[in-house]
Length: 146
Image 1 (tube, rainbow, N blue to C red):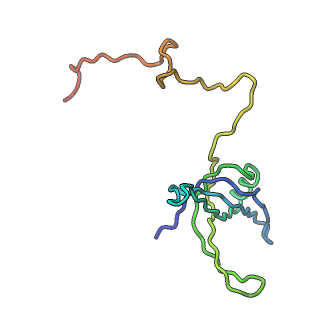
Image 2: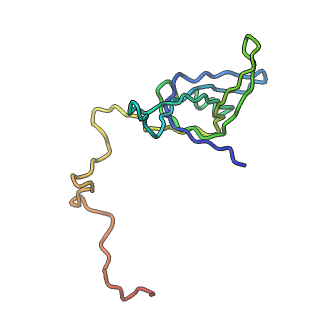
Image 3: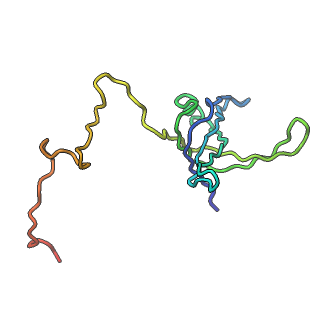
């Protein structure tokens, strides 16, 4: 049996880092994840809001480096929890227990010199006048083993 889930979305709130009685860190957060398809009626994509929990170093990592609006990729397992509300009603909820959390977008750098990445030429390739570390191969097939 396999229980593995990978989701990508934006945090809906800052992660909440707490500690268990034994001192184990646990972070709770929620991701807004867009569906791949659009609604037939409105043409808009629907969004699912998925609760996530991260334990130990992963929980400390997410609480330190992520905040509301951050794009994150979460890899883990789906867990169903049964619990009782204040009125004593039995409730059930699903959450993702995160094993790994990755940055979903690169960090934007604001520098006065502009981006250090060179933009490609109009055709989508680098301008060859800069020179290349690669050279053309002789197209002769005399040395091919077949």
